[in-house]
Length: 359
Image (cartoon, rainbow, N blue to C red; front, side, top):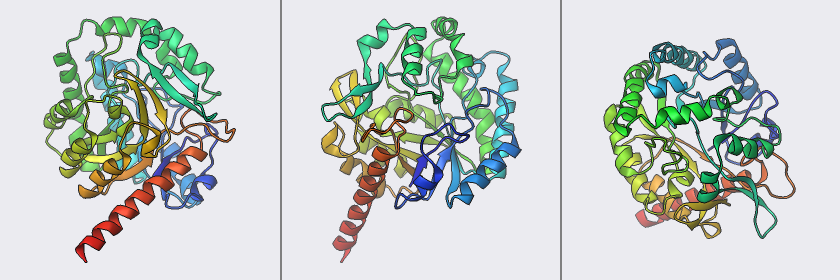
């Protein structure tokens, strides 16, 4: 059980606070100030690992080594950026990283219409209203998101990417889904053999939300497309960061079945477990972790991971803002700590139930 944490003063939550959450052994982290496509320096990574270890925590997972748009577009410059990606992977391996979470979402890594939607209990959550999002142009959405980010970085919404966002969206209107799959395969053909040599399992994050937006190609949205992804490279190092909140926004996705299939094959390396409350097929609020707070059966989800012999990393994903906390949207301390406790409680209960059945 780990937590996501942002270094360099870019987080309201401290390592010391994370260390005090029972059951949490480490963090998933990143370097948010490195421009997308550039090599992550080894000295920075060594210092980051030392800081985390000094707090009594481990770091074996990195999130958000974001992929340069030229790789996604299939442009000639992609080879240079892929080479930089491989050098970053080598530096990550040098500090003991075992899992790299990434995504292949074009232009917009994730989308919400509100980062602080009020709930009846007085808490706030990130929310998505499809029609509102469609009415926003990318610049307007960026304005809304940055105005609610409380001064913290928003991975996937790096300022240097925003200037080209409208032109990038226009570019993708001419790319077929088949061609976009080909661009992902080109990336994986270079990365997966390197990952095997370095011992880093690649874990792709689903598209969020898992349906078409602005005419952009979407790849990791359901079980059939995940099967397509895994077939691109039949290696255990080509795997998933299975996010129940992203995939669970679509009511047609059977999450326990997906977990049993893909975790059962050893292809899920990282689990982002959170709840969502679906308000319509394409509208949702993020929710507290317990099942009764949203639309997902969290017991069935955790049991599917347990039944599958999952031995990767789990983190509570986005939480609400509660008890007056002011933090990066989705990444406060209090509600995620409650999520950790809830998830560990489910895991312990399932483990003891199974032990009792054997007796």
